[in-house]
Image (cartoon, rainbow, N blue to C red; front, side, top):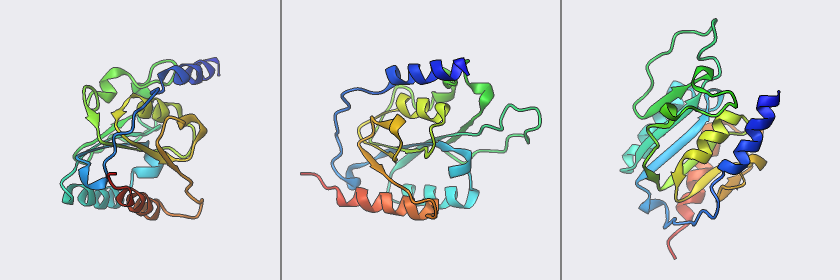
Length: 178
């Protein structure tokens, strides 16, 4: 548990500071990044509908999903990821639960218009990944560990992810350029 404590300490220094908001409304978004947990996003039907919704609006989607079962001896073999979806597991983390650089290659060197962080619980690999992605505007479920987000929404326990995401898009569409 010492490594976990050190990981949380390192997370504080990895937070984006002074993130200037450059969000000119949903219509100006071209590149969307999503980081989440397998249990939150890894539903093939949901992911396909989500991808279609984003791409139908002319936006490019890149996502990373932390699957804690990848790398365990009893885990099932990895299945093909959807287009733009990158999976990583425990084998892809360092001692302090920070994703190794190769995990986030799809995000490096790019500044996304929007980051959606689907971390409802403080899971270090997801929090590190969210903090590593450069974006102009950050949206997440409310979580103290993600205080660098620009918009944080509370998702009721009985609300399905798809309904919550629709509400997030609804809020984003209401934010217009000044």
